[in-house]
Image (cartoon, rainbow, N blue to C red; front, side, top):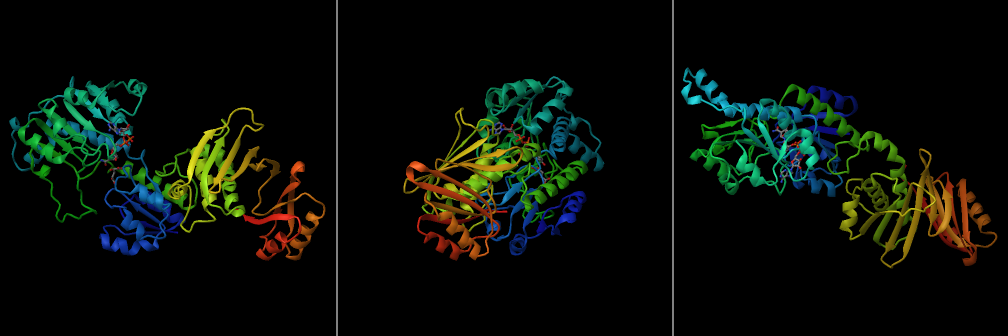
Length: 533
Ligand SMILES: NC(=O)c1ccc[n+]([C@@H]2O[C@H](COP(=O)([O-])OP(=O)(O)OC[C@H]3O[C@@H](n4cnc5c(N)ncnc54)[C@H](O)[C@@H]3O)[C@@H](O)[C@H]2O)c1
Ligand SMILES: O=C(O)CC[C@@H](O)C(=O)O
């Protein structure tokens, strides 16, 4: 496995990676060069500068993982990565404290004009009058987005005896109470009442430009504004105008709508905000501390390694997230789900129209289990890579309807997966499976037949007339091809005169043996099944 580090991560992170993979560090790559070399890599690690878009992914046929050494993933086309089955991992917790502290630094800097004053003194200008500031004490701080960083800022700024209000429609009132912050019911409320406004939302379609001319117009005259989240959340042109008029007394900006695309690339870099005396700008420094970069480097290295090994990662952005303990608990169910999904196209050939999957109430993280079923289903029939990341997407792309639900009480099993597949001919294929103890996977029902077999890597599925002699033929034919039968499960519906067999065998059943089996008088279907190891 080859990992390309295209933006700087800490030595500690680098060491973690080097223990287990082949790592190449190529910083400051021009876009054309990156597009040329990316084809050789299985994983790519970036920070916020490099755009991981469809063009880059198209040039990277081996790419399996993109590691974002940091939090925001607005430089990564997540939908495209998902479509291609590329796992995107990030490190959202690793730099939150640093970003919050940087925000607070910026708040104080613009309250007291510290950067401008320090710069003046260094230029031999020792005037105090120009740099008179304001106290934070007793003022109102308005926080937009009370997530990881917003809440850290809130907790810390209360120590300045500021009144802290926040606007975040996606979190509950209890969280506001827990943090001790007053809830602004609307963005307008927050804008009208704050002396200092700081924004901490992600950059999404909804939040881009959420502070524009209209919003600035209702802020208090003399308001101060901080953006240490993402460029573009505040409309820069409107902000410039309001700073020039003095309505906005000062702004502190760590992030710009357009930042250089690699470290040190200053060509054509310009932003009118830079020219304004009442603006403090830092070059996207929120996460640039020794501690944050150490944490980020180590975390991204571990996440990328786990993803490359096919293990679940706790910070995957395009797979439902799950913590490690829970993952250990549901791992056997993920395997069961994958196996159940993988039977269909190894037994049937009519395209699937609908997947309906019901889970016992006791089963958690069912979204992942459904993804596992879909992965198993598609594995035998799609050319592109299919994994937990893209299985749902690929199914939807194929027009397969996915219905998920909870089983009613009353089943014999407390941890059951009940899978019904309806194909384009309207035929139903149904499996039920469960896990005994910690990890004993069992299929307990197939098409209404009670069965009870433990899936093996190689199996033979037979549907036959319920009459004497059939089993003997099967044993003889398999014997002729050197296929040893390890287990055999036979069930029947006497009234219909039909029987079903699932044999676990020690090696794959050759096509020729299958051909001979289906020609045996009484055998209706014979299918070789191979499961992923
Ligand atoms: N400057 C830096 O170096 C730096 C470092 C780390 C993170 N960041 C950025 O900081 C921002 C916040 O990061 P975080 O870890 O706190 O994210 P988070 O996901 O923990 O919190 C974001 C909060 O914003 C809220 N939100 C979403 N849409 C909203 C809307 N329309 N109105 C109000 N609230 C809304 C969400 O409910 C959530 O609570 C992100 O943009 C991230 O990329 C910047
Ligand atoms: O320092 C960086 O690479 C960007 C950090 C920050 O913007 C993030 O989203 O984590």
